[in-house]
Length: 407
Image (cartoon, rainbow, N blue to C red; front, side):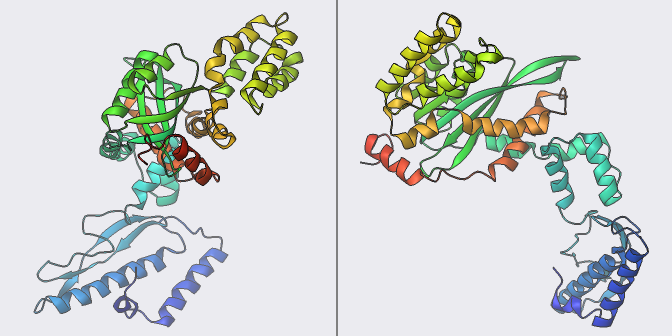
């Protein structure tokens, strides 16, 4: 920010001359950014004028201190490297606010830019190329790793932060990535837990890494949530991993378990050739879009009669999983729309896949967790609560007044 005293260090005519000079250079096809960019002289003047204004204010408060010439400094900015001559004082007590003495880039924006690019899935090579173009600054992979590693204390704090006592909805899912370990490329499961609190706000409660997806590891994930303050989950939406339901109920015995309908459709359709797939999906929809449990069970019977001879494995998957798939019929339609699928976490997963699809194998578990965390921070800013949340929470309050802490 330029202070009033800084503005007095150059007049309107000087500003106009600087702007006109920049415009003339642009007209002559000179680029805007870079160390020799058209706006570099203007930025230099603004920064130096601001520091001169800061020095005037400093000297008024530190008399008989006085000026002692100027120093020399180069700073990296979005317009390239800018040579500056910051003012000095005799006592050596002046500390520029706009550009501290040991700072070599204009504010923390450069590191934030690097973290943002990393969270979008850019490789260190691509980031280095982008920073070189924008800031005329060379950065090695080791330097970029050091910058992104500065987020690690924040990640550790986030992973151990206290959670709410009660979550009306929680979605649990796992994604798989390739990670280099001991000179080999191995598969790594990233366990993701997304919760919706009593205010209808979604929050990624945790990211956990393991060699594979298993009910045993999910048990440790749920135990960690409990240790961080979660006492109750009303409804949990999960896939059909063997032992998953039992793992949840071992930690949160009152939780209703909903198997994800979308996962069920994907798994069932594997048994069906393309020629019948549209008709089969349409018939499946008549099951989970039914108004009542009775209507859904009738639709399931019709589905079985129509397809059991042709695709017995597909029909059997619906019949065997029906108890978990039909849980949402016990709830009001407004609640069903939230709980019957893991779409909320699937949407988050899509954002992660966008950032990781070009990366191939990540160099370490630490790099994977760092990337997932940065993607989550960028993604959660766009989340909003369901439009029907007021109605949903009122229904849940009536249904579970004690569990929601309302008597």
